[in-house]
Picture 1 (cartoon, rainbow, N blue to C red):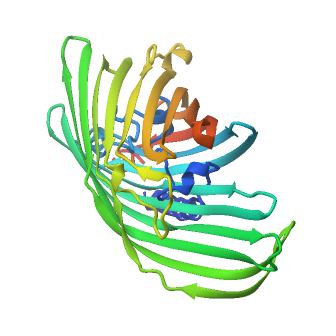
Picture 2 (cartoon, one colour; picture 1 turned 120 degrees about the vertical axis):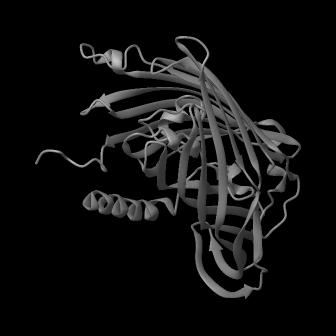
Amino acid sequence: MIKKLFIVAVLMVAFKGLAQEGATTSPYSFYGVGLQQFKGTVENKSMGGIQSYSDSLHLNLLNPASLGKLRYTTFTVGGNHQEVTAKDAFTEEGSSKSTFDYLAIGFPVSKKAGVSFGLMPYTTVGYKLDDSDEDIVNAFSGRGGINRAFLSAGYTVAPGLTVGASANYNFGNIQNEALRSQEGVELATRESNRSDFSGFTFDLAAQYERMISDKLQLTSSVKYSPSSSIGTENSRQVASVIFNSTGISADVDSEQIDVQDTDFDFPSTLTLGLGIGAVNKWFVGAEYTSQKASNFSNRTFTLDDVAFEDASQMRIGGFYTPKYNSVTSYWDRIAYRAGFRYEESGIVVSNEDINEFGISFGVGLPTGRRISNLNLMFEMGQRGTTSSGLIQENFINVGISLSVNDLWFVQSKFN
């Protein structure tokens, strides 16, 4: 068991290095602290992102109360490849990115309790914007994001009722750069801003399951993340640079500008879920999330025509498994998943709401030992609008994860 824990620790250290520069290609990551990333597993995402369903085999990273049902040590890792086509009223171009999305391990500590820990990105920033004409070059770029290391625990307080909590350490940095060059002026001006984040946030959750007939089970869940502040160290540099058609060739001089360190407020979030299904056979659920995103703001600079409003999300999804314990048919043990989501991001640009929707499908393929599985997900969706000179993004996500189950804390009776 010590050897297994050591291997997991090494993998998490390696994943931390990969997560530090989580990539995105969206111009909407320019606002606030970047685009919030989906914080669940491929299994969750293929069901529209619902978090109300959980079982004794899979880690549900969205709802810590689910750990009260965990019966096996479970290691899970997931990644995603995205293809994006961005267009405005006149032009269209494509981009792509591949990322590791999460790495986590969970294990039961008793028949009623379980814990998990892991790493995942929370927000990502990655954009290159150009607002130039014949005489003036205005170019903007950004990269970085906030990552999250979490420790979660869940406990069964009564038959069918579990509660849980997560402590999240948020860390990372976001770097923004603005370049301005004017025809007839020898030197261009570059302003570079950097914000380093570190601090804790918390989640509280509960889940209740009850049989309403011989075969049907009703499931309800609630998750609340109270508002929290994390420390932000800000720095700014202004430089005069030599700029030509090939880019910046040299810095002539630069100056560090004092910028006040601040606290960044993470808004409170409330999620309510309700679902119905037959145990280990099928499930259909719906969820609603409300987030006080109006508390968001840009860190060290202000923007015209940009506002932050409260955000909301609606998700519907579920799965179907013909016969999870079939010994004669592999295909009967496959879990088939599907879902839909619609999200109001809370970002308003030029009086246009930046919203997003996605339709997802997925399968869970048993591998090796029958309780471990390989999960595949396909999602297509859209973000933004071409109105008011803005950009609309059409995206395709392909996700893959591995969920491996084992018994670590059971003493062998035979050598």
